[in-house]
Length: 225
Image 1 (cartoon, helix red, strand yellow):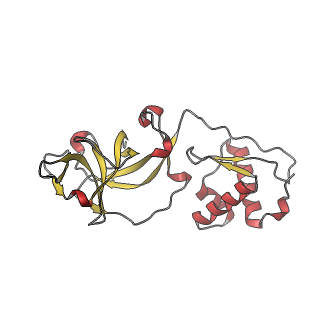
Image 2 (cartoon, rainbow, N blue to C red; image 1 turned 90 degrees about the vertical axis):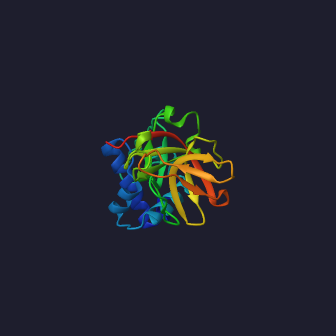
Image 3 (spheres, one colour; image 1 turned 90 degrees about the horizontal axis):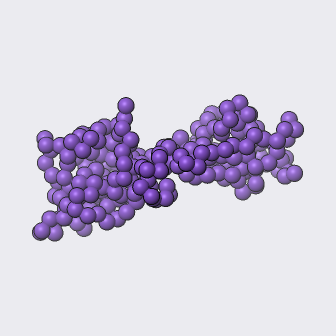
């Protein structure tokens, strides 16, 4: 039996809450729910303590399964063995890491923090054979790709890659402007890059390839209802 008393009071409270939540619901809570239940306002602090509990052998975590916590040992107090959490291996998840602008390029935050609440369940078909760790999701803002059936609020699933072929729909980072956009990619004969919208009301954007960085290629789209 591990020495439960060596944990901080905060960590003991987190374990007790996780155990009760699993017993009541059959699946674990999210980071934000743990924070709210234990009086911790910062998700990064919750995340830090969860990692400490993993290191101590009380929890295991899966980074690519929604709500991927699992109790690994008995929690003192009720004499009961914690209920195991079974996750569906055929329903992988990827992180929604922010927004992509299907409009004129728009500035994005320099950094962000995400946790289990930002995991999006996908089907294996959406991944097109790619490992979930090489895939991410972005929420669409704007309507420059409406003729490609991509509208504001849709989630676009991307494979991480730094190259593109003509006609690929890609996430592009324009480093000279610190802006991002979602467009079709074309390399012109003069060496410039044409970022083509799928909206007849909008004009293409021409950029210097030195300042055009491919961040990912579109694999699939989850339609916003």
